[in-house]
Amino acid sequence: MQEEVRNWIKGDESGAEMLERVLRERPFLILPPPLDRFPLRLGNIVEIVGPSSSAKTQILIQAAISCILPKEWKGVHYGGLERLVLYFDLDSRFDIQRLSQSLNHHILQTNGSVYDEELFLACMRRFLYVRCYNSIEFLATLKTLRYQLQKESKAHGFGAHFLMIDSISAFYWIDRASTPVQVGCDKRKNFSLHTVVDTVVHEIQKLLQVQPMLIFATKTTILSEGFPTSDMKRNFRNVSSRDATYSVGSRGTQKHSYREFMPSTWQHFITHRILVQVLEDEEVINKYKKQSTYTSEWLLPSLRLIDKFGVRDACMYTVT
Image: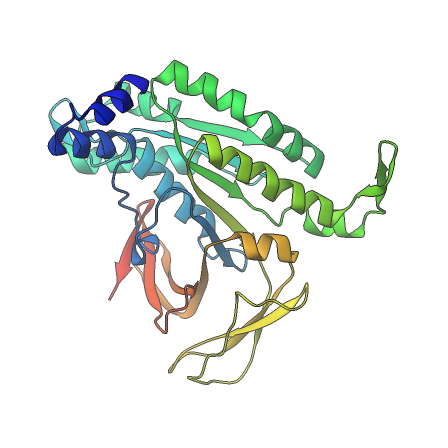
């Protein structure tokens, strides 16, 4: 890296060489729906919010597969990034079988239904899985994550591109109900919900300074029904209270509202937010089972547009 920078300063690097280097170090991101609406880049923090069973984890899995697959393997073009993915499982609900099934489906679909165990194992080694059972374990892991990623990068020859947190709200209610505990001898500093979130944001910010990554975080929320409307009023940048209520909806759909409960430190940290829901009145029935249709709406940046997508054979597709 230092030699490449030195050559660039001297003017020994042509425009074509510079473009090749930039694309190698930070390849173009091609993400599956519904994440393909915005040109996401390293350093963005994307929050995927929605009620339970709204395909949030499945979205993470599909994005992870696009990262761990190689661009090309034995003459077959897979279009992946061939980079590491770090996956934090905070709610202990991650199913490794779902990942393996989706990965196998992508491989078989691309190479003509020929199972390639060598490719499958190479991809799975790029998926770094971490399970934490409480906020203390999560914070401890974040504080040592820089050194762990350096070790993994050295072993694989390339670094992590995606950091996924499923779900950032897993310990919220436990931490909120806990009595604040004094930290060390500092009477002004307590271990509480707000200090936990502040520390999480601070550690991720420090990590991004030395290891640029695209951050994905899911958040489970409770939706309440309202009245049909086509008007939408939101202001996510100016959050005046810890808990805020936002309304979402569009013409022809039922309006819902969800309560933003995360502390303002986290709310101002994210750069993108997408709301996903299951569309209960639209189910496709095939000879195997019912297939639900989901909706996605970008709330930050705000788009007056709702997309539909489905999940079939462990893969996601756009519904038109």
